[in-house]
Length: 294
Image (cartoon, rainbow, N blue to C red; front, side, top):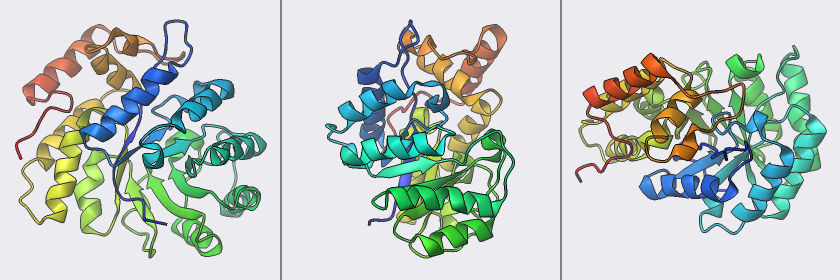
């Protein structure tokens, strides 16, 4: 399998006013990000409100996504705590020739590395055809992968456990595995990560920084001067002042009001926070995926 490398957006889900998933616009949004510079996207990651979307709607989207011209560029998140539901969901995706997944350990319960290894071993045992990126995000699930745990999973299942999205940032500087994708979860880590051998990033804010992030990535590979990295970092820092999902939907709703819709208990930014975000981005001379000079 080709190593998963490059700029990946944790793609947003587009929600209708009745709080149902707008399948067509969600896919259209993800494919537009690829056209704007992303090497691929993650559908139904945490930014895509995966934990809040019914399985039935996720399955309907998978059926539609399987016909996408960019089908091979999408990684599928699960957003499910149940092992059995995760396995069943992956089986449906595999039947549609969607084989790459981002899977976080279950939230709420306390457990150790041994239990996490068992969790992924059962998934692989049920679906050996899958390609899994581990999702390391202690803030969301309560568990943080250790280097030793990831090394053991990669050793046991080299054909299935193919990488990690590191949003806890304890792995990307310390994990050294051959033919294994290491993708920090922020543009703030992009250049530093590339310099120490990481594969790229998977980031929420790539929904609006696709072209800027891709330029930093391409300039690194071409050994060019980094003239865009500081602006990229400054933009990410502005978004980190708020809930990322709320901030992204707030900004995107300036283009299309449908982005004002998010699933409770989430909400868009209001009043001062909304104005501050927009004004501070304007001070940075930042426009969503604006064209950059060649």
